Image 1 (cartoon, rainbow, N blue to C red):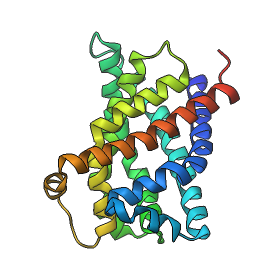
Image 2 (image 1 turned 45 degrees about the vertical axis):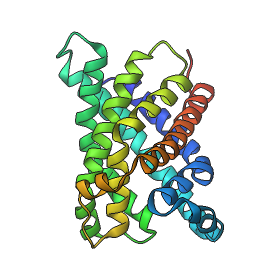
Image 3 (image 1 turned 30 degrees about the vertical axis):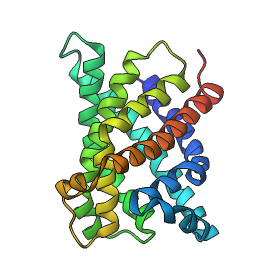
Length: 233
């Protein structure tokens, strides 16, 4: 992997960290609330959240999503270089590399996600029980993100990242809801099938809407920041 690719990954990570600190307040935290409770109680829960909780959440979001982007871009680029071109499709090759690197990156992401959701210190038991849903969440997201990103390579970074995040959100939505509910419900175990059966059409649409808003806005802002702060072409 070249120094240029490593620098690009780091710069994209910085851009996403900055974007995440801001979008925590307007998209990510509301999304987490919607995923875990009836919609009618969301606003009251948001209003009752302390400033300290918001600061901690925004800080952890910047740390997690920033490190996630660094691992995500660096890992996918490295895996893609190792794999070469196993198929004739650049889009398929990018998605395959994304699946491998995304699954591997879940071992790092699982350190932060439970602390962000549960607002408590690191616990190895929670980490271990959260790992499987986190693996599928990231493997599926990175597959769809990088495949779409490769298909939109000639577009502006804000469009590449924003549209790729929207597509990836649709692909891994149920696994993302499963991840959140598993982490919130521990030590009780919650199966994927249980979550799948609990999602009515209305609930699925609500979850998809909020997740798409959160990640679409977050990655669009990431692309804008990257274009203005780091991109030279």
